[in-house]
Image 1 (cartoon, rainbow, N blue to C red):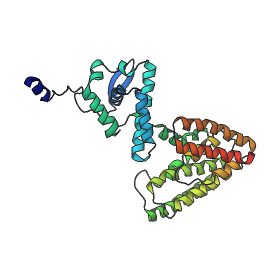
Image 2: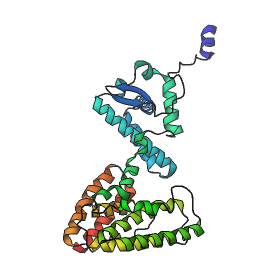
Image 3: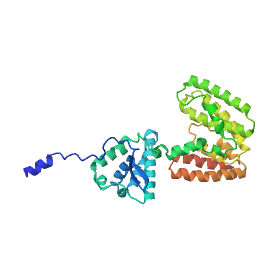
Image 4: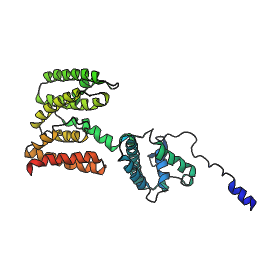
Length: 319
């Protein structure tokens, strides 16, 4: 009895680590039939074995965390994107977590503890492509300039001359922002004077809107000077767009921009949509019929609410 009690009190020998060094997550862990799995996948798969609903339970928890927004929400969205990507690869291979983890990994408490710490506590400080290209980031990037190749004159033609005024680094206080806004306003005026057609002016002001939206992270617009420059380009753009609303991609581009613009800069879109001719209103409704399910599928609730409001704005004049 004494020997049994002593044996129970003795610490268990440490379980053998399954890694021979530090693993950050994105490194390749295993390749099966030309499909690669990284260490984030390995940790998620090990955690899934502990859940009755497997990866679905993990995805549900990350969706709940993502709803909180902020830094925590961003990390949760990144992890959720990895879970979705992992499930897609498992489906392509027709495998379950047990079919990817070997027997030692399935039984390893060491791996379970490491997975728990990395996935639920450390967060994705080292990210995979799937984590970087979350649905939110992918759709927001598309809204800013993803439809420009469809324009008769691409706004990308004017973007470098507008962006170089602010660069990609640095921060502008309210005094510097006022000066920057004046420079930008003058540059837009110069480029508009050089424009040879309405379509070039349309492209210029569309480029200006994206440039200013992206500048907002770098400026203190306490005096709303940058907002004024944006408003001027928005008015010019919507005035030109009214006569060219049937152009391929134009309404889709504007609708997505209105869904994703997050600084309260776009103020004339609802009125613009409410004044569309019937054929263009029908086109806008068809575009929203594609946008809304996509946002609903990705559970982007704020953007979904905005898209639904835009649809109401289009339909309001038609009862």
